[in-house]
Length: 251
Image (cartoon, rainbow, N blue to C red; front, side):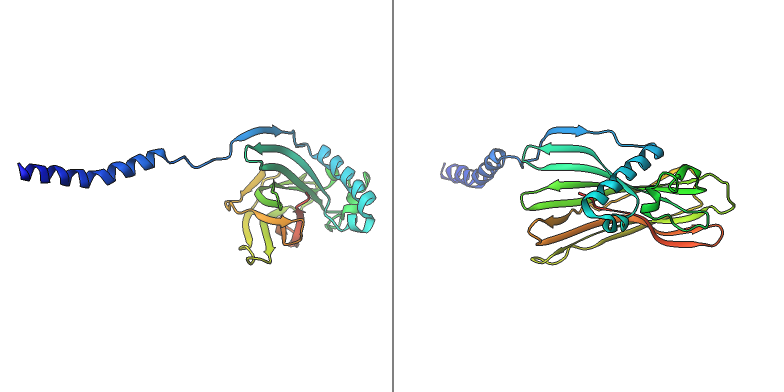
């Protein structure tokens, strides 16, 4: 009988902690996940002529607000708000598409922004080669500033074929960085994708596999920047252009 009591006591001592731990685990609250409160999407211009008209409008807006010198220093670009997502924890994500329209003149010199904004000089549909490069990016609104992430970039080469020269190769690049003076810089994002013998009118997509957001603070503690373009563009006549058709964050 004593042996039976000892055995029963040992069983209680052995299994009581396990039962208690299981009860604690079952009672623990689940990890919180931010729920989407609202999600709004906006149409984005896909027609090249409409995109050119929007880029012209934004150029003249920049001339008025920033001055002609500052406006001329940029690429011929248009930035559009594509959507806004609000989460239950107060986070707001704003999705943008920034597009640059790049073209050559008759001597295969890149057309600058000021000239491109001129409806006569910047008649892109008559150009032998014009390129639309688009950067899709997200701006996350925080209490201390903003975070940025590029989700993907796309490149479309339009070659009307009226000249023997055509695009034989281009290299897409995505570059993001921030300068965090408190904890040190985050690793810089610098990735490339090369497309050889692109087909006219085909859109080539380069997805950013990094989930890193780069921070910018209104207090100038952090400085962030993201940019994308063609680090290299080769033509069949032997011409090679570097760092063209770039787009930048434009919050």
